[in-house]
Amino acid sequence: MLLIPCPWCGPRDEPEFTYGGEPAVRPGPAADISDAQWGGYLYMRGNDKGPHREIWCHSFGCGQWFVLERDTVTHAIFSARKP
Amino acid sequence: MRYSSLSLLRQGLTGHASWPAAWRSPALAQSYDAVIIGGGGHGLAAAYYLAKLHGLKRVAVLEKGWLGGGNTGRNTTIVRSNYFFPESVALYDFALRLYEGLSEELNFNIMLSQRGMINLAHSDHDMEVMTRAVNAMLINGIDVELLDPAQVRAELPLANFSPGARYPIHGGYVQRRGGIARHDAVAWGFARAADALGVDIVQNCEVLGFLIENGLVTGLETSRGRVSAGAVGMSPSGHSGVLAAKAGFRLPITSYALQAMVSEPVKPVLHTVAASWATGMYVSQSDKGELVFGAGLDLYPSYAQRGNLPTTQAIVAAVLEIFPAFRRLKMLRQWAGIVDVPWDYSPILGPSPVGNLYLNCGWGTGGFKATPAGGWLLAHAVATGRHHPISAPFDLARFDSAALIDEAAGAGIAH
Ligand SMILES: Cc1cc2nc3c(=O)[nH]c(=O)nc-3n(C[C@H](O)[C@H](O)[C@H](O)COP(=O)(O)OP(=O)(O)OC[C@H]3O[C@@H](n4cnc5c(N)ncnc54)[C@H](O)[C@@H]3O)c2cc1C
Ligand SMILES: [Zn+2]
Image 1: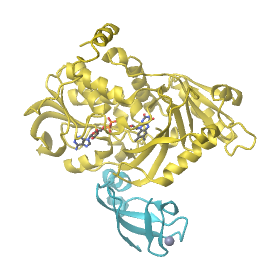
Image 2 (image 1 turned 90 degrees about the vertical axis):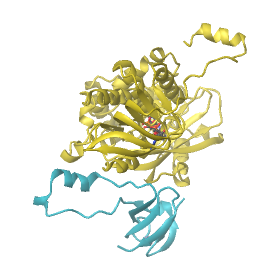
Image 3 (image 1 turned 90 degrees about the horizontal axis):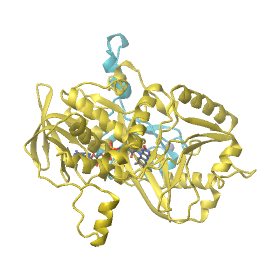
Image 4 (image 1 turned 30 degrees about the vertical axis):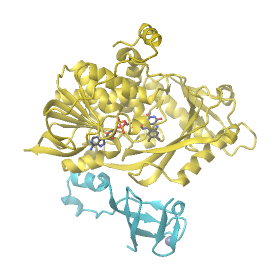
């Protein structure tokens, strides 16, 4: 069970949270973007083994999104930051 | 040596002391016509079909751990082909047909038991959606039948038909050709048959990097040194993203832990596979008598092969809701595998962005049932450089054109 430090509420249990994917910047303007670039933004993932940047939502708490740095092998949490 | 009742009798008379090893443990040679990364069922099957159907003489399988130690040896062994989209049906039913002849073909008992698989509906709306799915399957030629509550009850007498059930059973459907097979035996059977055709299976050999010249892979860097390869196929399941990164590209895949567990063994109480997607429950009884049940994903990226307690709790609750009689059973073991889940829950097959490197990954939570077909199609791609018509829709390029095959939506979660 992860103990996740919500930047607003403090440490809370894993079931209160929802994983929301890897942070990514939407490419644009749309007219200049190829199908492959757009597909890359929508679907491709780093899926790193080890340190990983993630966005999470404290869905059953304050409802806020934040950025979590976490190790996908040890599940150690390095930092949780307001966006 | 051919396995037969005669060889069993003969070995039995001498106390089973002189069975030969089922496969060799060769050193890694300097070069091969084709190298397959990953000694799970898919990789071993690919090597077997490369030697058997395409006549390749120098083939190697490189496995960083031991054969079948990945998801092949960790899954709940359900086989079926009751998918929604025609592309998926063509793929998974091809696999099931190969499974049906596999014990004979490999001279190795994979203990395929086509005991049927029943999916439950828990509301009228569930039943409507299920009827639609069943109609789609029938159009695609899959042997499925809708069941009314009385028919379900006849097959699953221990299921919760009490008036106060939180998830009342409104009916269901069955695929009678579905069932289970022995996972280890699938890996070992393919390994032994591939070895007999001259394939080098090298365990404890981790692929660390790709040698790429002018956009073509020419060899691999491994923990046992360099090896050159005419072509490379990869079936690393949970580690697909890690290997893709080493080859310089990304995949639309996230790796999650998927857990399963078994109870203490009991007398026969469940003669079919039962699943209820509304609760996330799927369960069958092994030949040893253990109840084998699997969970939903631990829903965040992980390479830790253990799984966390909230998910364990959820699945236990679901099983007990549907089968209250299992309440007193003790659990023997719990474990997890790292599964490579693609965006649309369908596998990624065929050419990769690097020349001569072919993909067989993204099988996620449901690739055991596809093992012989995944291997067969990877062998086809490696040997010919092209897709077979069955694998073509599963090309990586579907994520550029958005021609997704969304089985998560189509068939529900697909273990
Ligand atoms: C708990 C659980 C339940 C499941 N239930 C079902 C089910 O009921 N039905 C179903 O159809 N599917 C199920 N699945 C999914 C199924 O197990 C997998 O999709 C399937 O087994 C994948 O087979 P594979 O041969 O591709 O991968 P694996 O068996 O995982 O083999 C991949 C191999 O590659 C090796 N490898 C990785 N990286 C490297 C490297 N760099 N160098 C060398 N080797 C490497 C690994 O060590 C591993 O042995 C389940 C999975 C889990 C975890
Ligand atoms: Zn919060």
